[in-house]
Image (cartoon, rainbow, N blue to C red; front, side, top):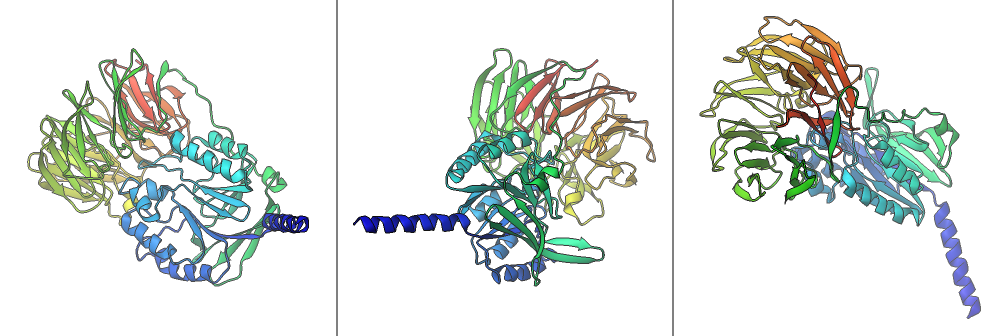
Length: 613
């Protein structure tokens, strides 16, 4: 009997030793950028055949499976990947979440999870998680405390049984707003490497001494030629061997690194640590630190603050007593800023229609289910709500909730709030068009196209600024466009500076303001017959792609960037102040009932800033 026990123990020891020394071979796919019938889509069958012809223990797809996250694109990507015969996991990237038609639900519908998934292979546990950004153009962030808790639960279980490798579409550098918190969590549980995509070109990175491996994109340009392939990772002993695998060719070795204190990684310069909070010339107070992310503006009525969060909670908060007054829970995150009119607050949801709640109690007043999947903002004018969903703009009576008209234009969310003035409704959509409707009937008066077929260059998240009989709009195509309000006729259109989606208007409607991607604010007269600048002010924060609109108050123009900074500029172009209040993008800037500036940040904080006079 004793001999049998010894044999069993010997077998178990041998098995454990074998498992710890087993060579693991992984195919890493990233940045597939599939749209039906595009070149990447056409090459996918050959890619899948190539993968199936090799022996892999795991296939990982690290985000950006599609171009704009539409259901048709996701379905096409899913159909391709399901042909892989090996075990596989996938998480999504910014192209699935920033332009998602469904608020991220379509990915979950197809893959069965929200981007958080794991795989155990030999002694390795691969923990994959997404980092957004969600619906709005911003840097990545690992969403709220619930996701961090999930990651920790997987790390704890994986590190107890062997080595753990993280997978996230974003590199874990300053492109992640809560980078310090995420890396600290990974290192606490002994994660040995982080796999990612996003940068398209393969490279090694230093994530605060954590080895970072960037996988190549499906397609890479090489002069006039293109190459198609993926990355192969071989985990052997203490090392990871990284190779590039072009379709139909043998893998070409690129790097080998050790998983613990590799000198190659240590020699790579890591990103500098994020800047600390600095009020600059502002007097500021952090009023809210939510345990979920915030994607809506912060609005006040009297001493009550209203906002929605990524946990699907619409909250009313007493500013003076610092107490929650009420909380109404919805099924999914709230991305659409609620609108307040009279004694009601109206919120548009991802799957429960448009709901009006009593301001003081949070009880439901009415519900409109004519539209679905609302991710954009609405505007209230003369007791009517104007708001759009995928391919349709609605006019709704704010008292009864009845739909008065709906205009179906075909495709694309109108994400920014529409501009309602002079009996017209002007809005852009993610279909490369700007629309103008008669506000009474919903009849189309005109539509304007930027001439591009690339929907990612649409004015879908751009507020149309209307004054002086003109319409001014900026979009990701980096043009400023001036149109006649009456006809939609183009007056001028220039690409003088790298504008994107962020703009504002002076209180008298005479001056158009825009933020450039170089961290500048420009002022342009609304009535000019050609492009001219009154001034251009550099606020010294460099590259920026934040969507947050500009706002003017008492002759001061405020703008925000993607990393929690607010700048104040005078009407003459003088830089008055720059302060840093968060690590993430601001959603919107609002003037509260107390005359102060209120701003919500995606990371879940809301600040009150004394307006500069």
